[in-house]
Length: 288
Image 1 (cartoon, rainbow, N blue to C red):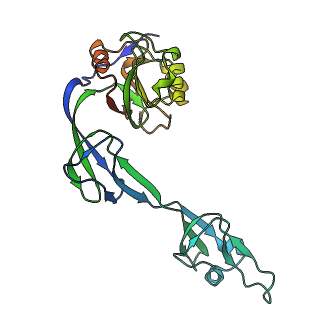
Image 2 (image 1 turned 90 degrees about the horizontal axis):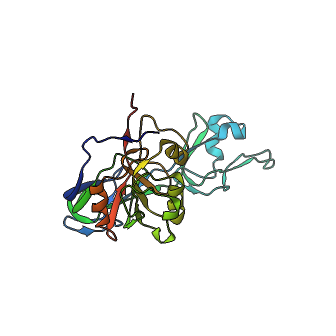
Image 3 (image 1 turned 90 degrees about the vertical axis):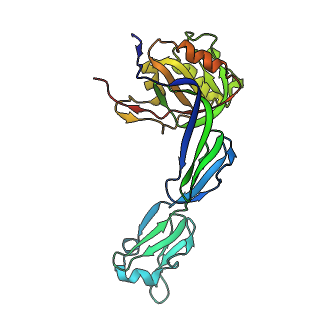
């Protein structure tokens, strides 16, 4: 297969003032103030998303008209309930032959409808924490929403990536920009590291990097079949970055047997041991 290199003016620079926006998906608490100095792992904002909605059709389960369900409830709206805890019970016949329905869900009884005979149990809130992602200074704060963080950085923009935000110290797997990244170059001491390769990284090397607990692996190229093997599917038109791979993968140059640009390799080599923040989010367009 021929190597495919794409050069749409990607930015690679030793010095850049870089600003990132950190934003909550819904209103919450911002944990930092203007001028605070943060590290990449600091939590800068947090909130809780509403829990899952779990409908329970008690009218059907208890063979009752919907309007009679309310009087059979053992829990009222707003009450907490645990899984397998009694939720409702029929009056029975002369106090006997009662039918009890236990909850299949844990959460809070949100609504009890006399019209449909349905009960809604809302699951526990889902905590969301937004981390700083880069070390730097808080230069803007938006109440209940998020903040902006700014830092002086060396910056490398790759052509393609998969996996989300992560960070770690930089370690070199290759000695040259055109050296292939094989599994044998990945070592146990790379746990938590951002691993820098040279040319094509193989599926085996990525798998081993994931197994040793590396935060990310970055190299010049990757074979499209190796990428498919790692993901388990073909990428067509997509926005990447939400894959739960256990590792973030960045390609700096393109697909196939292609080495990292010498300038990029040397710049990353000069930052061995420094902390790096990595984000694999990419917008992928089908090439016709």
